[in-house]
Image 1: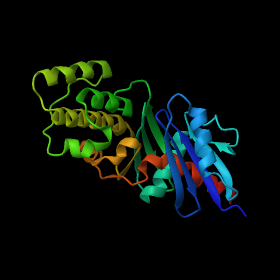
Image 2: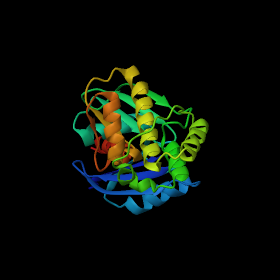
Image 3: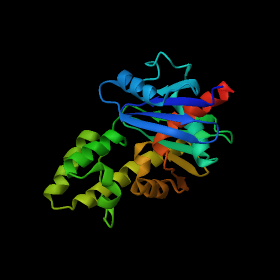
Image 4: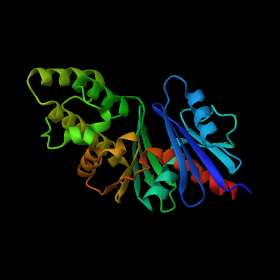
Length: 252
């Protein structure tokens, strides 16, 4: 008898997969999407699928690309369900992805009461951080240590093109790289909090997406929102986990 469900979340930057047994995530995979989303989904599927899997759900931008999927569900719904599982009952969700930002107002069951999505501008997304790290010559995987003890400088522009020019100008003026980095992060978090405030989230917030693994982001987002912001070691897998949870419920 099948006992596992598989969720695969194909985003613009990474493809994530999660195997769920009804109580916990028993295995997971993350790969860079690159220019081959269908191939990456196939690779995740081949790594995680077995005879124990009874239901497969895909989500994200590439959710239509895996023929073996039993169901395809929007990323908003899957992230909401994943946040419920990982947080135990947050009232809101913030997801900063590679090319978009999502804010979701959750109900007590992990359902979507309302949501906002900004996918028209790269500012405040993972791509924006990639640009910053490239100019500042810092390792994107070491943002917390890089930003430690920094004194943020003010970043006035949140347009990706203009912010790049501003960062270069600040470097020319002698500003420390780490001070600029935290200034950019603080600006992103303020922008995200303003964006999310339209939903009137009044309880603790779950922070998902690749940037949620950095404490400097969580801390600044919490400060900007004025609400407790929670993360989890599996925050980056939130959409895939939500897809797997929904698949498990369907399977049973």
